[in-house]
Length: 182
Length: 402
Image (cartoon, rainbow over all chains, first blue to last red; front, side, top):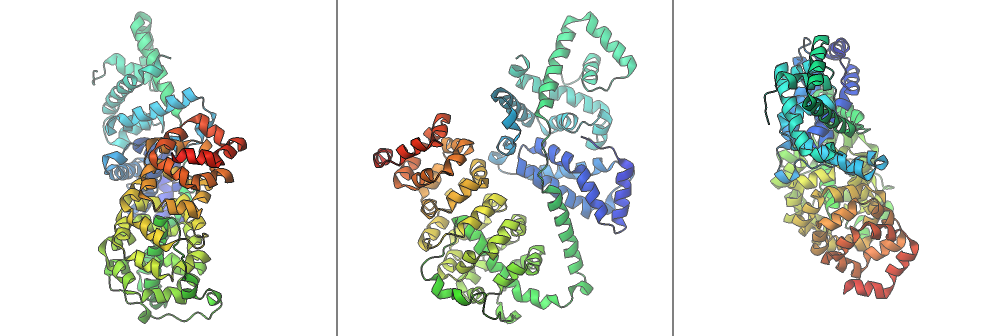
């Protein structure tokens, strides 16, 4: 899902800063799926994910002048998204980490009951991880980022990415043992 | 659980993620060949990554890109508006409509909370329906508006307000004489000056609500418009319970939902609903706010059949009943609302009549029905006409009330 189009992104940002606002629409179209999916897996709530993704693009547009073209556009906008997710999670505990995907997704129509249950359990297990561990699972499995891309996006060394991925998978294996042995 | 991966752990994850160099692959395969436990670990991790990947990606909301671009466009418009050269001659007109848009916002929020517009007896006499759109529209001036609250004015000088005055339908409604008359009512201005209302009016959720196409249709709706001139509406707006509701984040989130907006629009078609019931609903603020916080209820409201049900006057009255609202929080009722069968069943006229009956209300309130509704068998049975006829039998209704 991850789109590594640094040159095209840089050109679009430049056009946008030169007054061609339509160029930003290209960036929105390109990164909307990944932004929404990362937010959905980090927040576990469809509507919150939608808000986070939209707010991210609006803020990115407003702060476009601060973007460093030496960095990947995704890494820059990803940090904005994580801040939005943090803001949305600063809510009363009862409203957090509610998996609403089943209520809004139509994918369950084609699933068997068992597959639907398994997916629900996996989503919940991911939500139960601490944000640092959840982040690497989400970026690896739902955004298909490489270790190096994850390292740049998160802002930690590759070694740390590997370590977090190892621990996160160990924790998930514990949570999902019943499904792994079927 | 060791947080520090060994060399073999690193190789195992690198293999899973396709991040191996040729040299590492040779090292990894040698390890697997000489260690049965390593192979089992690798296979277990492969199963784990497989079931995680199987969750898959979700399509982004279809209108997300368009909504984002629109929001960005509005920000740009707002920036331009702050430049003297772009202000042009519209500034006076904007000032003149400040109060009108404020009234629209508050009344619409109230409708969303109460579930229907309080278009009670006497409304028609107050407004003068026949001449509503036919009469020459008087030119408004700044003197028509006597609002002093800075926060309210800030909101009304926002993008939302800008959009409102550019919308022909909204402009027509907001320039209506009856709406202007409402502004003269002291209870409304008191409500607008309340800090909670000001905060609610400046909240992003409300801005998004006002940008919602369905809600804009509701603004232009004739039935909605009639309620603007209703004195009882004004009294409801000055009610403390309404004010507290407006400030509730859960309520504001609910209001921006397109499904709720549709439900409000559908509800706006209801004629002759009780004004007193509207006030009663507003006074149930805590229960209603909690009910609106329930994702299951929100999912139900998005359903057209459920929205249609909400436009049923009898059911609207039941929403004014604290016990009925409390029943919505019941986990069994929530589960039933989530079921796919229920909305289909609600579309059947007989079932809708049944739900509106007093006996059914009592059953819901008692929590008994909620548990029954959670049953898949009952959900399926509800879709069958014969079963619906049985449910409608007076003796069955009496039994439910027992």
